[in-house]
Each structure stands twice: as C-alpha cells, then as structure tokens.
Figure 1 (tube, rainbow, N blue to C red):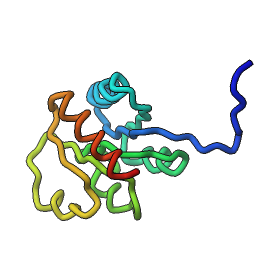
Figure 2 (cartoon, rainbow, N blue to C red):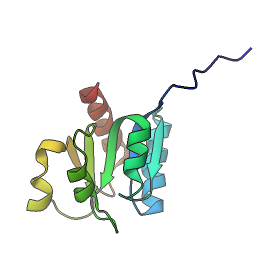
Figure 3 (tube, helix red, strand yellow):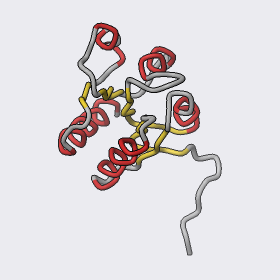
Amino acid sequence: MGDLVDSTTVDQFDVLVVDDDAAVRTSFASILRDAGYRVEEAEDGVTAPARLSSARVGAVVLDVQMPHLDGLRLLDALPEPPPVVLMTAADYDAEVMARRSKVFAYIQKPGPPGELRRIVAAALAAGS
C-alpha cells in the first residue's frame, strides 16, 4: 500500500535553476540532481516567479542575462527570495554587485560541477 499524500501539501524543491539557455539549464539541473537534490527548472525570468510562488524552494540558481525579464530585474522583483546564486558568463559589474544584499553567491559559467554543488549546498544550508 502506497503512502497517503495530503493534497494540500505545497510542492517543495531544493533548487530552482533559471536560465534561458536550455543546454546550460539542463546541464546545471542534471549536476544538481546527480548530487541528490530535487530540482525544478524555469526557462526565463518570466516563468520563474510562478515556480517560486507555487512551491517552497530552498535556493535559486539564476542566470543574469536572459531575454524578457533578466535575472537582475527578477531579483529586484522578489521581496524575500530564498538564497540566490547568480550565474553569468560575464564579469561582475556594478549593476550585479549592487544586489549583493539579495545574492548569496556568484558563479561564472561554465564552471566546474564541484563548485556548483559546493555553492548550492552552502546556499541551502544558509536558507534553512
């Protein structure tokens, strides 16, 4: 007999990975799933808020440069986000650094999988 599930239970994910580049997004999500995390994906800053409002999320891995609603504008729109790890292929400029109070860590992509796992583990620990 299977476990009974309360239909009022809110979805819960360890990490939400937000990136408009499907290859990067699925790669990062796969690295984190292989490390044992429950991962949800969002293809841009427009769909990410719905994922965040419909689930409890422990940490967000957020791309800075995306069309429509970039990572920085999304970050500005989130009043109390879970720990956020910003990822970018560019150097960290003044606009990115201005959001330091809402950002747990920064990573450059592509980066080593071990660094991603280490930073996400620290972000999840900080948010709990």
